[in-house]
Amino acid sequence: MMANVFAASSQLQATISFVFLVGYALARLASGVVTGPCISARRFAGCLIVAMGLACAATGTFLLSVPRGGRLDARDGDALAWVFVALISCIGMAFAGLQAMIPLLVMDIAGPTNFPLLRGLMLSATGTGAVLGPVTSWMALAANFDGTSPSAVAAWFFGCACLAAIAIVLHVGMPCQRHAAK
Image 1 (cartoon, rainbow, N blue to C red):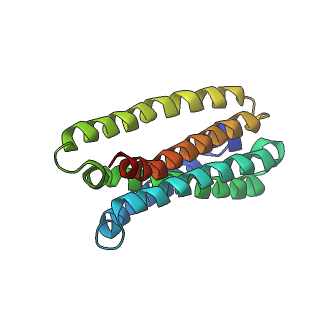
Image 2 (cartoon, rainbow, N blue to C red; image 1 turned 90 degrees about the horizontal axis):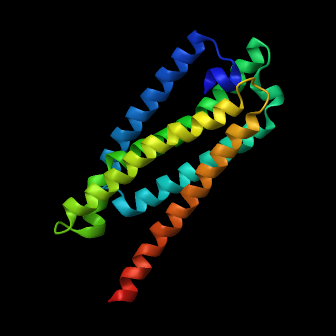
């Protein structure tokens, strides 16, 4: 994405990849440390989904406002690339936190009796997202091949924000449905 949208050099791409992966690892660690003793898995998952949706919307908005598709001179282009990295790192860190707490979230939602079934469903859902995310983002990046249409990539991020909004509605609505069933 960095090369396509911002024409980033290979050195900048390597540095950015390192920063993203360190943030991803720290988010997994922090999620494991705070979930349970400090905050419930369900509440923390809701916070992470909201953060992910907001970061997706902010990334889409940022890409729409980037002049000439982010392909500026080296200094301005690199500064814009770092803003983009900060935004997508927020998305990656929220996803990492959610991944780390799937077992705790399943126990909180379903209890030990339905743990294997629900954990399998949750892992299948994240696996489906892991396949669909890159495939759909590739289509948006292909539309931006010449670097003049970052709006296609922005639309992809807005679509992700809408999916996060649906996830939070389902997340919030699930306890209400459980109480109504009793």
